[in-house]
Length: 160
Figure 1 (cartoon, rainbow, N blue to C red):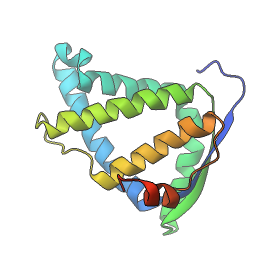
Figure 2: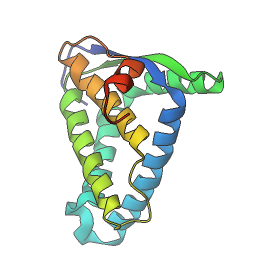
Figure 3: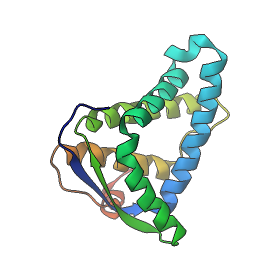
Figure 4: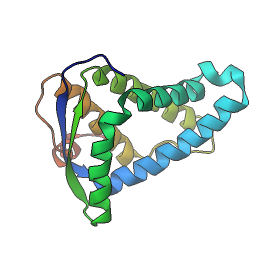
């Protein structure tokens, strides 16, 4: 459990429900393949498959309690047929470093996929843009910046 005492509110405005669902599906596919690789060969634990699987497990253990309410908001919006929703998280400041590490490892995993080392393809561009917005909003807002809604990010992003 993180040692932070104060939680920071992170608001993800205009959160794209359908893009997130596709990104979640892709991430699960990637993690299943990485997990299989990591558990089938002990030498791979220091390479990207093992490191990413270990990081995801650590982040779930440390921050899962802080992300569940947001996940519930997204699930309710999806069940209601909404295409977007404003999601609010309350997270410890230490989460900023964790999402930075996670973002870097996902970029590394995409490069691993592009090189043809896996059956899973690299993350599609729209999902990469979403991932960068999603994770950067935690870093930005924890640092004190105002929320940047997804539509504004997408319009200004060369990734989207």
